[in-house]
Length: 509
Image (tube, rainbow, N blue to C red):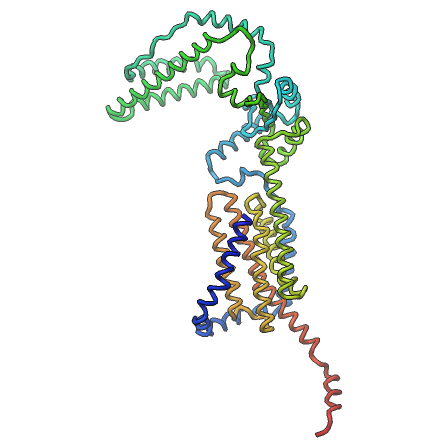
């Protein structure tokens, strides 16, 4: 981002310093200013409202700064990336539902112990995997550990006997080929209707079991919906439904037959080996070099920064090389936050040096940075008052507001150095500052139309920051320059006694 933005500005600077002056050589760019003398007078009268009252403007500015300072403590950095996603996005809403369900049942009796986010611990061999799994399971922040270690390392004697008995019981089971004909919808409907009635009778018998009652009721509702869907539409639609049901029936029975075939052909001569694992499990939990993966599921919501820190702190004491999405999120957001804070510091230092080289005055540097400082303070106060946190998206406003906002003070000070008058709105400089500020606000303000909440917050914060810096530059800075000009004029004006003594020493004509 820094290379693209900085390089783009340099590329734009070249034609602005070369081609644009050439295009203006034969232009009549001042005609507009001369033809709008009436508007210039109106802008001057408006500007005089605060130019002639510099002490009042300074007082109002100070009060606003004090009020903004009281809200700064409410501004915080939101590390939760879920809060940046598009509102209403199905994946995000489902993730929040999972988090709510888990938090509602901390003992996880009715909730799944698995989290969407998990940490990854790598074991070099089976013995290390077993030891690590035991240590990780005992941690207070860990809900469970998924791995193939316990299956590969356990004593298989009892299971092998059970597998042998199961193979003997299933050896005589044979399946006929599925019926290739389309499903008879009326006959299927009668069968489903009978099943629907049996489920109703069963539901009456298990009213005391809330879980089973809910499952039976859901199954009855599904059967009812299926019967309605089968008869929906005309004859062609019903024929299509019949073919779809036949296709589903064949796939279902093929799956059942394959499952029984796998049970009948199990190898019970020895314990489970890595090569005996299904391909999906082997590819997920065993590496090509033989290393084993342990998926560590957190007990708390690790989108939350504090839970994330606690979870990773305990895991790193067991394995300093732990990785996975929670680890990446923790270090990514921390690195991003520090990077933009450092970028803001570097940009401020660079701006101070450039402004000092330009004006050759430390006071000019302070004056140029005043609009940025006041505007940033107002921005922080508004963010705190309206509960708008910083996040990994809008924190990039730190260097941007400093870099863009300081141009207001530089333009105003340049004009003041040329004309020694604090009035700017009646001249081209004031209009340039106003129009350039509004165009920048329009550009960043368009981001507020985005569905992504992080991009939207970036547009909102950047637009408000540019607006506050521009307002401070157009109001407070000219008023302050006017106040400083008056004080300098008083110091330079000779006193009455000095004037009389000077007159008295004049030689007679």
